[in-house]
Image (cartoon, rainbow, N blue to C red; front, side, top):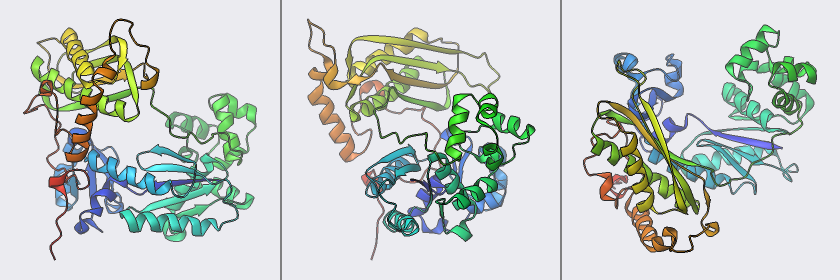
Length: 420
Protein backbone atom coordinates (compact mmCIF):
# COMPACT_ATOMS: atom_id res chain seq x y z
CA UNK A 1 0.00 0.00 0.00
CA UNK A 2 1.03 3.60 -0.66
CA UNK A 3 0.01 6.80 1.08
CA UNK A 4 0.18 10.20 -0.57
CA UNK A 5 0.33 13.07 1.91
CA UNK A 6 -0.37 16.45 0.30
CA UNK A 7 -0.30 19.82 2.06
CA UNK A 8 -3.42 21.89 1.41
CA UNK A 9 -2.84 25.21 -0.42
CA UNK A 10 0.73 24.94 0.83
CA UNK A 11 2.11 28.45 0.24
CA UNK A 12 -1.03 30.06 1.68
CA UNK A 13 -0.94 27.63 4.62
CA UNK A 14 2.66 28.65 5.37
CA UNK A 15 1.61 32.31 5.48
CA UNK A 16 -1.29 31.49 7.81
CA UNK A 17 0.96 29.67 10.29
CA UNK A 18 2.56 33.00 11.24
CA UNK A 19 -0.43 35.33 10.74
CA UNK A 20 -3.63 34.23 12.47
CA UNK A 21 -5.56 37.14 10.91
CA UNK A 22 -5.43 35.28 7.57
CA UNK A 23 -7.57 32.41 8.80
CA UNK A 24 -10.93 32.31 7.03
CA UNK A 25 -9.89 35.12 4.65
CA UNK A 26 -9.26 34.92 0.90
CA UNK A 27 -5.48 34.78 0.39
CA UNK A 28 -3.30 34.34 -2.70
CA UNK A 29 0.44 33.99 -3.24
CA UNK A 30 2.13 35.24 -6.42
CA UNK A 31 4.91 33.80 -8.55
CA UNK A 32 8.35 35.35 -9.07
CA UNK A 33 8.26 39.08 -9.77
CA UNK A 34 4.63 39.16 -8.58
CA UNK A 35 3.59 37.74 -11.94
CA UNK A 36 0.81 35.16 -11.60
CA UNK A 37 -1.32 33.65 -8.85
CA UNK A 38 0.20 30.30 -7.87
CA UNK A 39 -1.50 29.48 -4.57
CA UNK A 40 -5.04 30.18 -3.36
CA UNK A 41 -6.88 29.65 -0.12
CA UNK A 42 -10.24 27.89 -0.36
CA UNK A 43 -11.93 31.25 0.21
CA UNK A 44 -10.05 32.66 -2.79
CA UNK A 45 -11.07 29.69 -4.91
CA UNK A 46 -14.68 30.25 -3.89
CA UNK A 47 -14.42 33.78 -5.30
CA UNK A 48 -13.61 32.28 -8.70
CA UNK A 49 -9.90 33.17 -8.71
CA UNK A 50 -8.10 30.89 -11.16
CA UNK A 51 -4.65 29.37 -10.84
CA UNK A 52 -2.12 31.13 -13.04
CA UNK A 53 -4.09 34.35 -13.50
CA UNK A 54 -1.82 37.39 -14.14
CA UNK A 55 -1.79 39.58 -11.06
CA UNK A 56 -1.76 42.90 -12.95
CA UNK A 57 -5.08 42.03 -14.59
CA UNK A 58 -6.79 41.30 -11.28
CA UNK A 59 -5.00 43.73 -8.94
CA UNK A 60 -7.87 46.20 -8.53
CA UNK A 61 -10.55 43.51 -8.30
CA UNK A 62 -8.58 41.60 -5.66
CA UNK A 63 -8.29 44.76 -3.57
CA UNK A 64 -12.03 45.41 -3.89
CA UNK A 65 -12.79 41.86 -2.73
CA UNK A 66 -10.49 42.18 0.29
CA UNK A 67 -8.13 39.45 -0.90
CA UNK A 68 -4.78 39.40 0.93
CA UNK A 69 -1.93 39.17 -1.57
CA UNK A 70 1.63 37.99 -0.85
CA UNK A 71 4.79 37.87 -2.90
CA UNK A 72 6.38 34.41 -2.98
CA UNK A 73 8.56 33.69 0.05
CA UNK A 74 10.43 30.58 -1.08
CA UNK A 75 12.87 30.73 1.82
CA UNK A 76 9.97 30.24 4.22
CA UNK A 77 8.16 27.68 2.08
CA UNK A 78 11.30 25.60 1.54
CA UNK A 79 12.06 25.49 5.25
CA UNK A 80 8.48 24.55 6.14
CA UNK A 81 8.54 21.86 3.45
CA UNK A 82 11.68 20.36 4.98
CA UNK A 83 10.02 20.27 8.38
CA UNK A 84 6.93 18.54 6.97
CA UNK A 85 9.07 15.89 5.27
CA UNK A 86 11.09 15.37 8.44
CA UNK A 87 7.89 14.66 10.36
CA UNK A 88 6.67 12.27 7.64
CA UNK A 89 9.97 10.35 7.74
CA UNK A 90 9.01 9.21 11.26
CA UNK A 91 5.97 7.37 9.85
CA UNK A 92 7.71 5.09 7.34
CA UNK A 93 11.23 3.86 6.49
CA UNK A 94 10.51 4.53 2.78
CA UNK A 95 9.63 8.14 1.99
CA UNK A 96 9.64 9.68 -1.50
CA UNK A 97 9.49 13.48 -1.56
CA UNK A 98 7.50 14.03 -4.75
CA UNK A 99 7.30 17.83 -4.63
CA UNK A 100 7.65 20.72 -2.20
CA UNK A 101 4.23 19.93 -0.67
CA UNK A 102 3.61 16.21 -1.18
CA UNK A 103 5.27 12.88 -0.53
CA UNK A 104 4.62 9.17 -1.00
CA UNK A 105 4.94 6.81 1.96
CA UNK A 106 5.47 3.09 1.36
CA UNK A 107 3.31 1.17 3.84
CA UNK A 108 4.62 -2.38 3.49
CA UNK A 109 4.13 -4.13 6.83
CA UNK A 110 1.50 -1.61 7.98
CA UNK A 111 -1.52 -3.64 6.89
CA UNK A 112 -2.17 -4.82 10.44
CA UNK A 113 -2.73 -1.21 11.53
CA UNK A 114 -5.93 0.76 11.25
CA UNK A 115 -5.07 2.88 8.20
CA UNK A 116 -7.69 5.50 9.06
CA UNK A 117 -6.21 6.02 12.52
CA UNK A 118 -2.73 6.01 11.01
CA UNK A 119 -3.73 8.75 8.52
CA UNK A 120 -5.45 10.84 11.16
CA UNK A 121 -2.33 10.60 13.32
CA UNK A 122 -0.29 12.01 10.42
CA UNK A 123 -2.78 14.88 10.04
CA UNK A 124 -2.80 15.60 13.76
CA UNK A 125 0.99 15.43 14.15
CA UNK A 126 1.71 17.83 11.25
CA UNK A 127 -1.19 20.09 12.17
CA UNK A 128 -0.22 20.34 15.84
CA UNK A 129 3.52 20.60 15.27
CA UNK A 130 3.63 22.81 12.16
CA UNK A 131 0.15 24.23 11.66
CA UNK A 132 -0.06 22.87 8.09
CA UNK A 133 -3.30 21.06 7.08
CA UNK A 134 -2.79 17.93 4.98
CA UNK A 135 -4.90 15.38 3.13
CA UNK A 136 -4.00 11.70 2.95
CA UNK A 137 -4.85 9.20 0.22
CA UNK A 138 -4.05 5.49 0.63
CA UNK A 139 -4.30 2.82 -2.08
CA UNK A 140 -2.51 -0.25 -3.53
CA UNK A 141 -0.66 1.81 -6.20
CA UNK A 142 0.78 5.31 -6.40
CA UNK A 143 -1.67 6.37 -9.13
CA UNK A 144 -4.61 5.18 -7.03
CA UNK A 145 -3.09 6.90 -3.97
CA UNK A 146 -3.01 10.14 -5.99
CA UNK A 147 -6.65 9.54 -6.89
CA UNK A 148 -7.55 8.85 -3.27
CA UNK A 149 -5.88 12.09 -2.21
CA UNK A 150 -7.83 13.95 -4.92
CA UNK A 151 -11.07 12.54 -3.53
CA UNK A 152 -10.02 13.37 0.04
CA UNK A 153 -9.75 17.03 -0.99
CA UNK A 154 -12.78 17.08 -3.25
CA UNK A 155 -15.02 15.52 -0.59
CA UNK A 156 -13.31 16.96 2.47
CA UNK A 157 -16.49 17.39 4.54
CA UNK A 158 -17.32 13.73 4.00
CA UNK A 159 -13.79 12.36 4.22
CA UNK A 160 -12.19 14.55 6.87
CA UNK A 161 -9.21 14.81 4.54
CA UNK A 162 -8.55 11.04 4.40
CA UNK A 163 -9.56 8.64 1.62
CA UNK A 164 -8.63 4.95 1.61
CA UNK A 165 -8.98 2.54 -1.31
CA UNK A 166 -8.44 -0.94 0.10
CA UNK A 167 -11.19 -3.09 -1.44
CA UNK A 168 -12.26 -3.83 -4.99
CA UNK A 169 -15.57 -2.04 -4.39
CA UNK A 170 -13.78 1.10 -3.16
CA UNK A 171 -11.44 1.03 -6.16
CA UNK A 172 -14.30 0.73 -8.64
CA UNK A 173 -16.28 3.56 -7.04
CA UNK A 174 -13.23 5.82 -6.95
CA UNK A 175 -12.50 5.20 -10.64
CA UNK A 176 -16.08 6.12 -11.51
CA UNK A 177 -15.91 9.33 -9.43
CA UNK A 178 -12.76 10.71 -11.09
CA UNK A 179 -12.81 12.19 -14.59
CA UNK A 180 -10.08 11.08 -16.99
CA UNK A 181 -8.58 14.57 -17.00
CA UNK A 182 -7.94 14.34 -13.24
CA UNK A 183 -5.95 11.10 -13.46
CA UNK A 184 -2.27 11.48 -12.56
CA UNK A 185 -0.23 11.18 -15.75
CA UNK A 186 -3.01 12.08 -18.21
CA UNK A 187 -2.25 15.49 -19.71
CA UNK A 188 -4.70 17.91 -21.28
CA UNK A 189 -4.16 16.74 -24.86
CA UNK A 190 -4.43 13.06 -23.98
CA UNK A 191 -7.55 13.77 -21.91
CA UNK A 192 -9.24 15.47 -24.87
CA UNK A 193 -8.28 12.57 -27.16
CA UNK A 194 -9.61 9.98 -24.69
CA UNK A 195 -12.83 11.88 -24.12
CA UNK A 196 -13.41 12.04 -27.88
CA UNK A 197 -13.05 8.24 -27.89
CA UNK A 198 -15.70 7.87 -25.20
CA UNK A 199 -13.40 7.58 -22.15
CA UNK A 200 -14.89 10.06 -19.66
CA UNK A 201 -13.76 8.59 -16.33
CA UNK A 202 -10.87 6.57 -14.98
CA UNK A 203 -13.23 3.60 -14.82
CA UNK A 204 -13.92 3.87 -18.57
CA UNK A 205 -10.18 3.61 -19.24
CA UNK A 206 -9.87 0.41 -17.20
CA UNK A 207 -12.56 -1.17 -19.38
CA UNK A 208 -10.36 -0.84 -22.47
CA UNK A 209 -7.84 -3.47 -23.51
CA UNK A 210 -4.09 -3.09 -23.07
CA UNK A 211 -3.66 -2.92 -26.84
CA UNK A 212 -6.20 -0.09 -27.10
CA UNK A 213 -4.53 1.85 -24.29
CA UNK A 214 -1.08 1.29 -25.83
CA UNK A 215 -2.34 2.78 -29.08
CA UNK A 216 -4.20 5.76 -27.60
CA UNK A 217 -2.19 6.64 -24.47
CA UNK A 218 1.54 6.75 -25.04
CA UNK A 219 2.49 3.12 -25.60
CA UNK A 220 4.15 1.35 -22.66
CA UNK A 221 3.59 4.35 -20.37
CA UNK A 222 -0.16 4.10 -20.98
CA UNK A 223 -0.21 0.37 -20.24
CA UNK A 224 1.68 1.03 -17.02
CA UNK A 225 -0.95 3.62 -16.05
CA UNK A 226 -3.71 1.11 -16.82
CA UNK A 227 -2.14 -1.48 -14.52
CA UNK A 228 -1.74 1.14 -11.79
CA UNK A 229 -5.47 1.94 -12.02
CA UNK A 230 -6.18 -1.79 -11.78
CA UNK A 231 -4.35 -1.80 -8.45
CA UNK A 232 -1.13 -3.38 -9.75
CA UNK A 233 1.81 -1.17 -8.64
CA UNK A 234 4.20 -0.42 -11.50
CA UNK A 235 5.65 2.91 -10.35
CA UNK A 236 8.02 2.02 -7.54
CA UNK A 237 9.00 4.34 -4.72
CA UNK A 238 12.05 6.38 -5.74
CA UNK A 239 14.00 7.15 -2.60
CA UNK A 240 15.81 10.48 -2.47
CA UNK A 241 18.68 10.57 -4.93
CA UNK A 242 21.27 13.17 -5.77
CA UNK A 243 20.27 15.54 -8.55
CA UNK A 244 21.87 15.12 -11.97
CA UNK A 245 21.96 18.88 -12.50
CA UNK A 246 21.46 21.94 -10.30
CA UNK A 247 20.02 25.21 -11.57
CA UNK A 248 19.33 28.67 -10.23
CA UNK A 249 17.36 30.94 -12.56
CA UNK A 250 15.42 34.14 -11.88
CA UNK A 251 13.53 36.87 -13.69
CA UNK A 252 14.69 40.41 -13.01
CA UNK A 253 12.57 42.97 -11.19
CA UNK A 254 13.23 45.37 -14.08
CA UNK A 255 14.97 45.04 -17.46
CA UNK A 256 18.77 44.84 -17.23
CA UNK A 257 20.97 46.26 -19.98
CA UNK A 258 24.23 46.84 -18.11
CA UNK A 259 26.87 44.09 -18.25
CA UNK A 260 28.03 44.72 -14.68
CA UNK A 261 24.52 44.21 -13.30
CA UNK A 262 24.08 41.10 -15.43
CA UNK A 263 27.34 39.67 -14.10
CA UNK A 264 26.25 40.45 -10.52
CA UNK A 265 23.03 38.50 -11.09
CA UNK A 266 24.83 35.54 -12.64
CA UNK A 267 27.39 35.55 -9.81
CA UNK A 268 24.56 35.46 -7.26
CA UNK A 269 22.85 32.56 -9.04
CA UNK A 270 26.11 30.63 -9.34
CA UNK A 271 26.66 31.14 -5.60
CA UNK A 272 23.23 29.69 -4.79
CA UNK A 273 23.78 26.74 -7.12
CA UNK A 274 27.20 26.05 -5.54
CA UNK A 275 25.62 25.97 -2.08
CA UNK A 276 23.11 23.35 -3.26
CA UNK A 277 25.96 21.43 -4.90
CA UNK A 278 27.94 21.19 -1.65
CA UNK A 279 24.80 20.28 0.26
CA UNK A 280 24.49 17.03 -1.72
CA UNK A 281 28.29 16.50 -1.59
CA UNK A 282 28.75 16.75 -5.36
CA UNK A 283 31.08 18.61 -7.73
CA UNK A 284 30.28 20.06 -11.16
CA UNK A 285 32.20 19.44 -14.35
CA UNK A 286 30.44 22.07 -16.47
CA UNK A 287 28.61 25.39 -16.07
CA UNK A 288 25.88 26.63 -18.41
CA UNK A 289 24.85 30.30 -18.38
CA UNK A 290 21.87 31.73 -20.26
CA UNK A 291 20.31 35.17 -20.70
CA UNK A 292 17.19 36.22 -22.58
CA UNK A 293 14.68 38.99 -23.16
CA UNK A 294 11.02 39.00 -22.14
CA UNK A 295 8.69 37.05 -24.41
CA UNK A 296 6.04 39.72 -23.90
CA UNK A 297 8.10 42.86 -24.47
CA UNK A 298 7.79 44.56 -27.89
CA UNK A 299 11.55 44.35 -28.49
CA UNK A 300 13.94 42.14 -30.42
CA UNK A 301 13.87 38.65 -28.95
CA UNK A 302 17.29 37.43 -27.87
CA UNK A 303 18.24 34.13 -26.21
CA UNK A 304 21.78 32.94 -25.80
CA UNK A 305 23.47 30.31 -23.67
CA UNK A 306 27.00 29.01 -23.29
CA UNK A 307 28.42 25.91 -21.60
CA UNK A 308 31.92 25.99 -20.19
CA UNK A 309 33.66 22.80 -19.09
CA UNK A 310 36.04 22.49 -16.17
CA UNK A 311 39.27 20.46 -16.47
CA UNK A 312 38.58 19.13 -12.95
CA UNK A 313 35.13 19.03 -11.33
CA UNK A 314 34.71 21.42 -8.41
CA UNK A 315 32.26 22.59 -5.74
CA UNK A 316 34.10 25.85 -5.09
CA UNK A 317 31.95 28.97 -5.30
CA UNK A 318 35.05 30.94 -6.29
CA UNK A 319 35.72 28.89 -9.40
CA UNK A 320 32.09 28.40 -10.42
CA UNK A 321 31.29 32.11 -10.09
CA UNK A 322 34.37 33.07 -12.13
CA UNK A 323 33.35 30.68 -14.89
CA UNK A 324 29.75 31.94 -14.90
CA UNK A 325 30.83 35.60 -15.02
CA UNK A 326 33.22 34.87 -17.90
CA UNK A 327 30.46 32.99 -19.71
CA UNK A 328 27.90 35.77 -19.57
CA UNK A 329 30.47 38.24 -20.89
CA UNK A 330 30.89 36.08 -24.01
CA UNK A 331 27.18 36.04 -24.87
CA UNK A 332 26.30 39.59 -23.79
CA UNK A 333 25.00 42.12 -26.31
CA UNK A 334 24.95 45.78 -25.16
CA UNK A 335 21.83 46.79 -27.12
CA UNK A 336 19.51 44.28 -25.42
CA UNK A 337 17.25 44.63 -22.37
CA UNK A 338 17.41 41.31 -20.55
CA UNK A 339 14.54 39.91 -18.48
CA UNK A 340 16.00 36.71 -17.09
CA UNK A 341 19.27 34.87 -16.51
CA UNK A 342 20.28 31.56 -15.07
CA UNK A 343 23.11 29.22 -14.14
CA UNK A 344 22.96 25.43 -14.52
CA UNK A 345 25.60 23.09 -13.08
CA UNK A 346 25.94 19.77 -14.93
CA UNK A 347 28.20 16.72 -15.22
CA UNK A 348 27.84 16.23 -11.47
CA UNK A 349 29.95 13.65 -9.67
CA UNK A 350 30.35 12.74 -5.99
CA UNK A 351 33.08 14.80 -4.33
CA UNK A 352 34.96 11.66 -3.34
CA UNK A 353 35.02 10.46 -6.98
CA UNK A 354 36.66 13.49 -8.64
CA UNK A 355 39.22 12.64 -11.31
CA UNK A 356 42.08 14.91 -10.23
CA UNK A 357 44.66 16.63 -12.41
CA UNK A 358 48.15 15.16 -12.12
CA UNK A 359 49.84 18.57 -11.82
CA UNK A 360 47.56 20.61 -9.55
CA UNK A 361 45.55 20.34 -6.35
CA UNK A 362 41.78 20.24 -7.09
CA UNK A 363 39.97 23.38 -5.93
CA UNK A 364 37.49 21.16 -4.10
CA UNK A 365 40.41 20.33 -1.77
CA UNK A 366 42.18 23.69 -1.90
CA UNK A 367 39.03 25.69 -1.03
CA UNK A 368 37.43 23.11 1.28
CA UNK A 369 38.09 24.99 4.53
CA UNK A 370 36.94 28.33 3.11
CA UNK A 371 33.73 26.93 1.64
CA UNK A 372 32.93 25.11 4.90
CA UNK A 373 33.39 28.35 6.87
CA UNK A 374 31.25 30.38 4.45
CA UNK A 375 28.45 27.78 4.48
CA UNK A 376 28.51 27.65 8.29
CA UNK A 377 28.22 31.44 8.61
CA UNK A 378 25.39 31.66 6.08
CA UNK A 379 23.51 28.78 7.68
CA UNK A 380 23.89 30.36 11.12
CA UNK A 381 23.21 34.00 10.31
CA UNK A 382 21.10 33.73 7.18
CA UNK A 383 21.69 33.25 3.46
CA UNK A 384 23.76 36.04 1.94
CA UNK A 385 25.57 37.05 5.13
CA UNK A 386 28.87 36.33 3.39
CA UNK A 387 28.97 36.71 -0.40
CA UNK A 388 31.55 37.30 -3.09
CA UNK A 389 32.16 40.89 -4.17
CA UNK A 390 31.22 39.79 -7.69
CA UNK A 391 27.60 39.51 -6.53
CA UNK A 392 27.45 43.29 -5.97
CA UNK A 393 25.81 45.26 -3.19
CA UNK A 394 22.66 47.11 -4.29
CA UNK A 395 21.42 44.39 -6.66
CA UNK A 396 18.87 46.65 -8.32
CA UNK A 397 17.94 43.79 -10.66
CA UNK A 398 16.42 41.72 -7.83
CA UNK A 399 12.92 40.32 -8.33
CA UNK A 400 9.87 42.29 -7.26
CA UNK A 401 8.78 41.08 -3.81
CA UNK A 402 7.25 44.12 -2.14
CA UNK A 403 4.47 42.05 -0.54
CA UNK A 404 6.68 39.28 0.80
CA UNK A 405 6.17 38.20 4.38
CA UNK A 406 9.06 37.81 6.80
CA UNK A 407 11.35 34.77 6.69
CA UNK A 408 10.10 33.67 10.09
CA UNK A 409 12.14 30.48 10.45
CA UNK A 410 15.50 31.24 8.82
CA UNK A 411 16.52 34.86 9.59
CA UNK A 412 17.15 36.21 13.08
CA UNK A 413 15.75 39.64 12.26
CA UNK A 414 12.51 38.10 10.98
CA UNK A 415 11.72 35.90 13.98
CA UNK A 416 8.35 36.41 15.67
CA UNK A 417 8.32 38.44 18.87
CA UNK A 418 6.03 37.25 21.66
CA UNK A 419 5.13 39.77 24.36
CA UNK A 420 3.59 38.51 27.56
